[in-house]
Image (cartoon, rainbow, N blue to C red; front, side):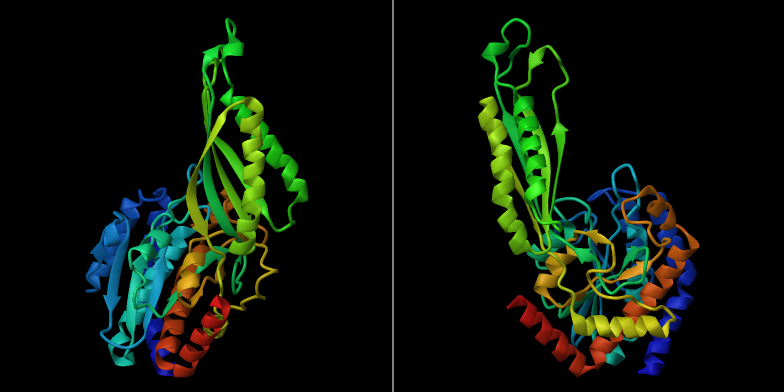
Length: 390
């Protein structure tokens, strides 16, 4: 095992310059979800050069891809994200995720046949907004036959997992009646009033929800003419809690607040559900393997959930409901610099981020090797997954 792990680490080192180049190139050309054509091309071209024959535009998503290695044995999927945030670029460091996942996949592929393992390198677009890529891919069968899934996410510390929240997304459209605001305002029903009253009702609700719950909303379509009673306003909402079950309990309370605005303003309210994102169920057996491999590289991986200080929602949660999965954090930014901040976007193209690409690729590749070769690890991972699902 030591020899095999040394070989996959050497395989990463042999590709280190290329992996860092790809990470930096993706960072320099940020693309929002389902528009990541440049990143898709870089990653699939790299896979093609290595003989992995990627399927471009996999599963009907133009910027998804899938590449496979190995012909028999347990299947591990290594997941790559590469979308950016609107206006702020790679402030979540998905360029690091993409390059580290690519490196892990290329390295593990070099030993897959002799390890009697199968590998899936899956390019998953659009993590940052609905409809999220991993959920769509899973619905279309991308994870069929997959036994475990791994990825690594940038942060300001090396941690075993992010404090993830399940989320429910909705679009709320208020419909009123247009009228001249000066000549006959009494003929109208103001959709903007409905939206603002609903927003304020949610603001009052926030005092009475749990400290670990979040309700976030924005107005996405608003009137532009001051002399017309607006008849249409659109808002978008995200409801989050530590588990999907708790988020679902929060939903009717939030919807009642939003509907109160419509009732007060004499308007109608239409709701479009954007789907749900489950919290990540971190597989402890796989995590132990990852931690040991990271420590062999000289990194000390910190304590579990509750202490990372990095909070968010991810479609990797959906994957973790389907197969044993891990979503550890790797340091690219100074302590206290959090994801989705401009300073974090700068850190995602730093020397620390370059090191994270290489170390993340090595740790994931070694964890894949552990899973392929250790039946006890596979049994523990499956048992823990089944227990969590129950």
